[in-house]
Image (tube, rainbow, N blue to C red; front, side, top):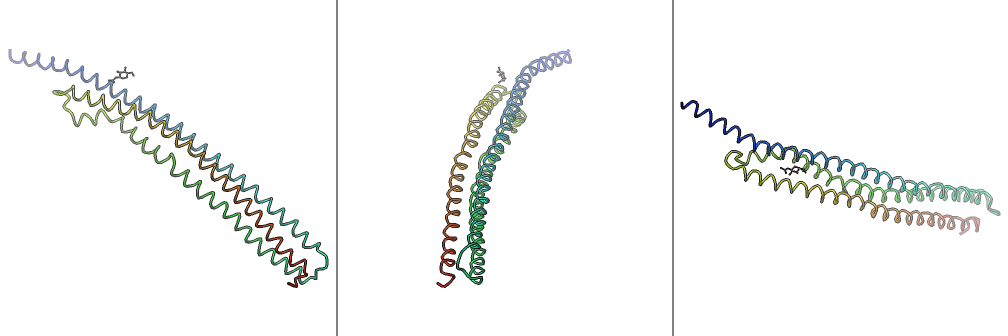
Length: 232
Ligand SMILES: *[C@@H]1O[C@H](CO)[C@@H](O)[C@H](O)[C@H]1NC(C)=O
């Protein structure tokens, strides 16, 4: 008699337990789906970010690349000018060539400086923008996969299912909001690369012009030796 009674109780409990467990499974499946969608979105943004960084680097490198032949050409026509100068004895010509080589060293440093400053800014931007936030977001998003099990540890699913479901509802809203707002945030981070790239590009153009002008004034200075046959 009693055994039958207990059996009925157990069966009723199991039947009731089945229902809350369905809700939990549904939550779990929803959390997983959202986590996968969000992860795919972050991955897409990650590739987009890397593409932007690569493109800006390429453009800056092209700008630096323009600088080298321009200055090299200026130097080779300057060498011809030295060789063709009239009324200059060999000793002076040799001295002027040495001066030219010395100044060429400084001109090389100018190019290196331009590259150095551009690289500093760009590296800082490509490391510290987007990536740290994407990683934080990714780990927070991954946490959502285990959310239901985690909530299980804090809640009593048997006697306080409503509280448990309420908590999961709250978490569900949190992750949905997170997915939208963080996606927007990461996208803005990528767009902000453009501001830095613009600034670095302008600085590089300015740096190049300064280096080219310096080379020109170096050459004018050296030419003044030739004009007087090194008797200054
Ligand atoms: C799970 O997602 C579906 C579809 O978005 C939704 O209708 C349902 O209410 C969600 N379930 C829970 C427990 O939040």
